Length: 172
Image (tube, rainbow, N blue to C red):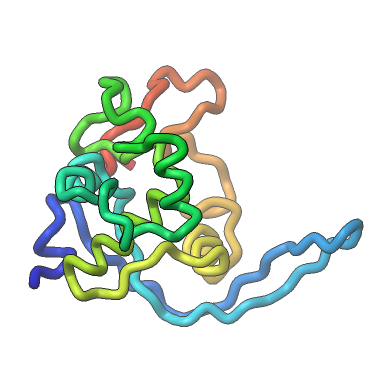
């Protein structure tokens, strides 16, 4: 059995995230509270999942294999007739080393279950707390790179960014 590092086409790497703490704003009716969470150490993919990496799931019958899907996800897949991500055949979004787009939460879970099955590794989506911790770091930064906006550090739609589409996952 191959590991995810061996199975998935480049670029793929795990980033080790040390344990830490994060605060999230929780809404309870009209009341906002800030709640602190401890986040255990974990690993997260260093880059967004690419179309080439997701293609392995599509080509191996991931959309036809019920065991990878939650019951609600399988029902939605059938009702919506999903056989691939929404923009899979759109040239604007489907470069091999570009991030896969048009994937629902159900499809993302099915992919993680498929990859776990293929590798024997327990691969899941990050929790809300883990995702927020990675995004803001120990210092609680506004952006992953710090507190000031830097348009050179991401593909964005602020101030008329001319790119207008996704970019290779290693670009930023």
